[in-house]
Image 1: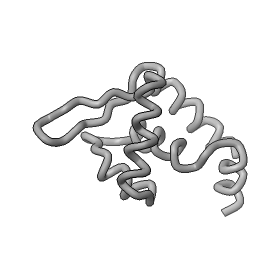
Image 2 (image 1 turned 120 degrees about the vertical axis):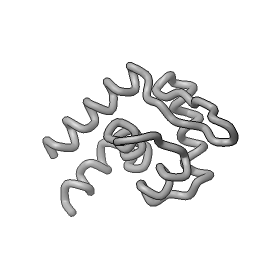
Image 3 (image 1 turned 90 degrees about the horizontal axis):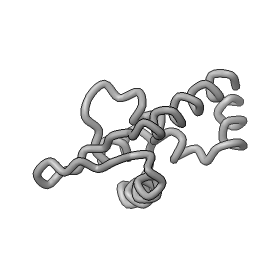
Image 4 (image 1 turned 45 degrees about the vertical axis):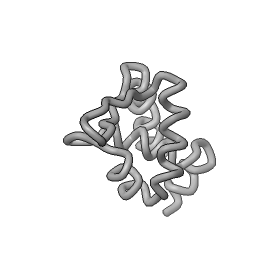
Length: 89
């Protein structure tokens, strides 16, 4: 798919797709479901999510043993812009 290749030139594919996955989610999102949806290992997803948390793009909400992922206001804004660029390509 040419658009996917072009998108990959401008953005690191997995982190961008993770933000879009969180933005477009219809229900609660956990690192394990996100890893499956972007075809990535759980440990790699967690590492990227930790960077996103440090950058104030996401928050972790602990529910028992699980951590629910939420986009911050800034994270939503960035995800919307990434989505616009993706649609333009």
